[in-house]
Length: 481
Image 1 (cartoon, rainbow, N blue to C red):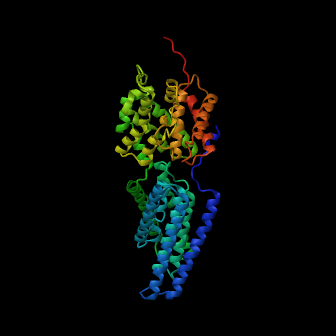
Image 2: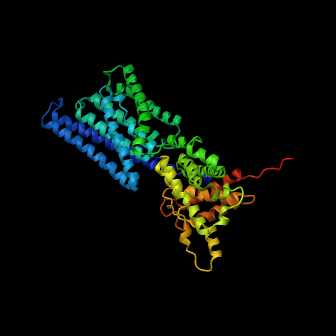
Image 3: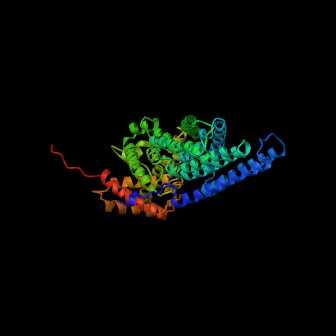
């Protein structure tokens, strides 16, 4: 049981946090250095124009350029998928710009009201925590650089202390909360992590008063600004997550949960027109969700993909074994025609998914869940019916090989569910060997060449399916008549 609890969810390790602490100290040192430079350039006077002002704006522009170069560099190393990388870069850049604008507006009221972690939270939720962590550092650097360079912070000790406190609080929030926010975070936990920022920044007003001696703003007013900033950050995040999801076509868990509702048109059709296929899809969903959870993958995507992976069978319901109640129509046609009908369910499913405007990642799995595997039943039937050579490639599915770990999970669970259902008295050992055979067969056929799944992942998937199948396919006692 211990192995199935292994999780590869993206967390901030101790090494990440040490590096983050060092980077945050470097950021604060650079910001203080920039402020000192400004103070020397203008001798503590408010900027009114001239060469000094131009130089400061040039420095500020340099800060923006460097920060976006850092983002580009990180994205280039982390997201090599062209289309997905562009979408992620687009939503990250947009969130950073919005973060800067909101902080700029809030700074006119109080430094404590700035929603400095707005972009980091959104990216951690829409994409993954490490990118959100990186985006959050960029936003902190940009915002504080602007406040210290372009406003009247130079020579104002209270402003420098305030900004340093804000930087420390924002970095602390990154270390504590952003590493825990991800696409599997529930709504209640998500809002809880948003409110956590208030716990970190609330003592800032008291700390500021202690460090500065006296505060130009009453404590109650500072507390009001802090509370207002927290509420504003929560509302902005909740508003912009679905908006950015729609604009950049990034699928969130809320959307996937909606698509898994049995009232969705395609699922209603599957339930009424092909109930056996629907039952198979639900069971695959249970297996896939457990495997995704064990691997730290998106459980919402796993379940939704499993529910929709066989929707193409709606075009020829009676040609699939689980839906046959009488004769088998394949007995009346050639194996070549049978193969064409069977493999067509993947392309039909993709067309139906696109027509229903399902997310692209989800629609792709309808084409990828069989990859280019051979339909061995019809291939062997053709070999028995002819004396000559039979082209094996003709009997391969015409889909794409899995390009994501979720697609690989669906491929394994789909084949495993059908095979386990046909077993007599399945137990953990039998099922484990069966799933191993399915995995090894797909590896030998090169089906997982296009996705980043590992041998350790395969071991976890095998054990998860074996353990779960004993509950799904358990025997029952015979009731008295």
